[in-house]
Length: 392
Image (tube, rainbow, N blue to C red; front, side):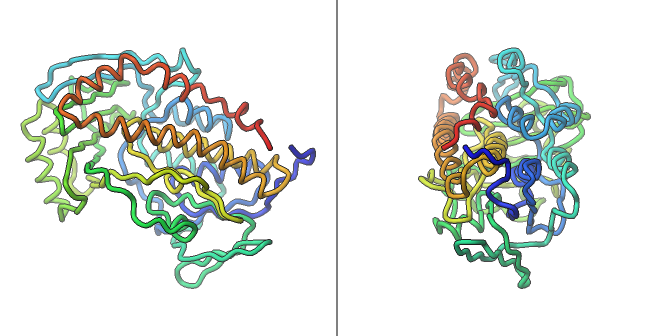
């Protein structure tokens, strides 16, 4: 570790204005690094539905900026119970969530758009550059020049690819092609909705392999719902109306409130996505370019760790850039510490996602709710300050 407090880089371009990129910008700027975010979209729109922030991700965010976690808790829903039901509505299991008592942070369910809004509000608006689609970069020993669509360029000391599972930065850096389709499609929606079976601070998973539905309270009267099923290919079903019509056909006979909540959701806000991942990489960094979040380690959403591991990435990267003797050493320790952990989480996500769609998927999920303590301990006992002290 260096004695000086000056970071090894001064200017950083973060490609991608999603939640991983925004959190990383906050972390880097806290270290005195002039980090800017470059996002291809013309505006930060409220897309997506809900997601879970688990103790490890919340600890990372708290290490980045403590007030963020308090804001998020006010905006979301702290989960108290998970209910497991079959598609006839019968409750087969209920689990009380005691993560706060065990790990010092809860499981927080929140709207993706609200999370993005809170993270963006923690940054100076002038450092978030919209309508900047990265098309290439070139690097030398001293700097990286990033080119955006329309011949806009920026020269920086480091580029961080935080641009998701179809990362342009990853393709330029590594060139490993399209994501790996996992044989499952997902549909998500968000709606203000009340129902006697949808209690506050609860989430419900309804299973009838090879299909499942999740219903989550995300705060402020909103319910986030997701439907998944096995599909031979990942081609889109067409228009928004066609997608909604198919969902009602596939899930219309399920117990209340599944058909009703799909019917009540505006077809235009239903998000259809293939479930995909990528094989783990042995290195995320080359020269003055590195990867983060889904650009580095995209995973099946089955254990809810995509956002949480991105926050870990961002915090640790900022610490290594602030404390390592040089950039090469900072990125080496970043790769060493992050790749091993995320590979384990990727593998568990892939196994769990695949296993849940087997004919006995409901039985597997019941067992997972009962006996997952060893993995949860390893995952949720993540301590950012201790991890970041492991320097080369």
